[in-house]
Length: 254
Image (cartoon, rainbow, N blue to C red; front, side, top):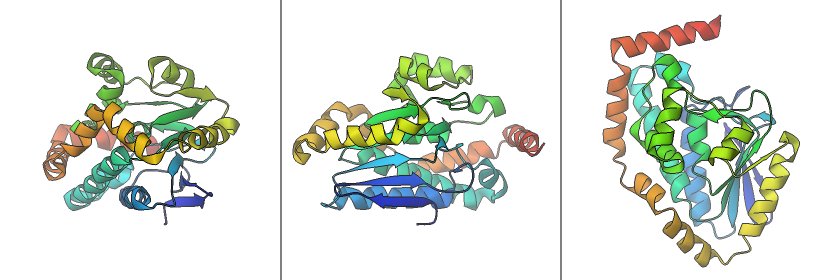
């Protein structure tokens, strides 16, 4: 694994995002995430997983530079990998806890929302939410559906309209996360929570998870990846949308 670091414990695995300084979500990372979640779901020795980042930085979100400069073929490859990774994470039938160790905006937020339980570290720059409207970037339908499943359509749309990013306490208040604590305690708390969940008989847990998350599972299972990807790529080729992304990348370089 080039973009993930796997730490094997007696009954579970910690999957740490490990892709450069800001853990940008690129095609390689999404492909690897999809593979490990599918593999661990079938591995009887793995009772559950924790998805984490490094201290003060879970992930800065999608690798916009890759998406903007790689061309249509590269964009298709990215979105196929990203959306199939989301499917694998949502379909994961075992306990899944997310240790949000720092900032986690946009595409990283959606990763966290696939988990059963989310613990987020406090910090001035530690935020999550969908702020794509700041650069007039289209949010793909499947991501909108996941966000709206958690917040409700009206609240999700209002947050997107304002490109609202939430700190850990705000995210806790509106239900995006389940706990807010100091960064140094996030992973320890995640392990405690996961160890509690894996004590539940596996068949009972997986069936109950499917019952209670039916709406989220429907989003994953009903997604036509090819159609979704073609729509995303088409949206990205709109000249004005592409110009806004170009301006955003220029501002980042400055």
